[in-house]
Length: 119
Image (tube, rainbow, N blue to C red):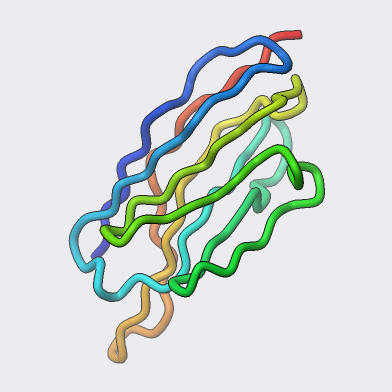
C-alpha cells in the first residue's frame, strides 16, 4: 500500500503561481511513476503531468511551458504551476503507480486539493 498526502492548493489570481507537493509513504519501494491529474466540475479526470523514476516527464498540451513536475529521492513529487489561468481551476490529485509481483500495477491516489484561479 502507498499513501499519498498532498499540500499546496488554494486560491490564486490569474497569472499567479502555486506549488503542489505530494509525499508518499508506505511501500514506496514499489512506486514506478508519479504524477498529477485534475478534475474540473462536470468534466472527466485528466492527466496533467507524470514523471518516471528515471526522470522522464510528460505533460498535457494545455500546461506545457507553464507547469513543471519534479520528484525527489524520497518519492515526494512536486508540481510548479506558473502563469495560471482560470481554466486551470480544478481538484488536483496526486497519483503513484506501484508495482508488486503478486498484485501487478496499481493506481494509488491522494485525497485531492482544490486549485481555484480567479480572473
